[in-house]
Length: 173
Image 1 (cartoon, rainbow, N blue to C red):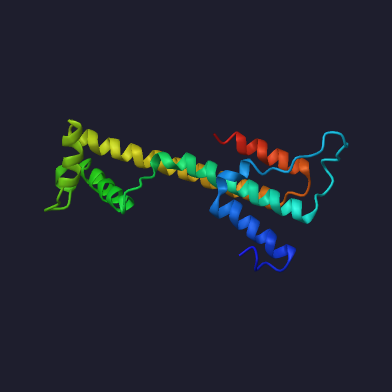
Image 2: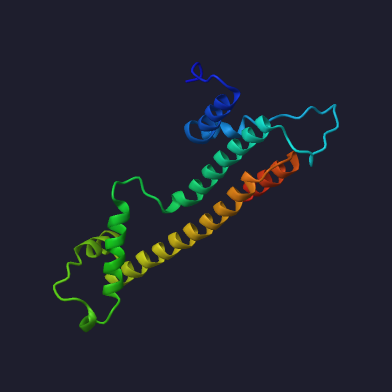
């Protein structure tokens, strides 16, 4: 692909793709280093190539941070979200009074969850609902932070902007 790039613009797009999608972990290593012997006006706009590089690098770091925060609630098992939805619905029903539950409902998924943990079904139901609530909270918080930081990343103009966004990314731990 590099050989096919016939312009600086295509090379910059390829670099962005590599940093954002293929190897985001490298984004920490490819920060532009400013010469220490030359005074730099950090508010001065960067060159477009430098700016695009920093945008790609910051976006990759943002995605890594957001994914790390969300990973606590994400499973690598296929269709885990569907299983969790089923457990959540069963948990809501089990916490209803017996007469308000749908007839002939199969609680085996929730029963199994409770049995393997040696806890009552009501406690299992509450635990699942707490898990879902916490996952939802983390998802909302990270989504709002992602939207805010993406907007700021796309608007960087000078080194000062980059440093401010990078500092805030560091606070996402």
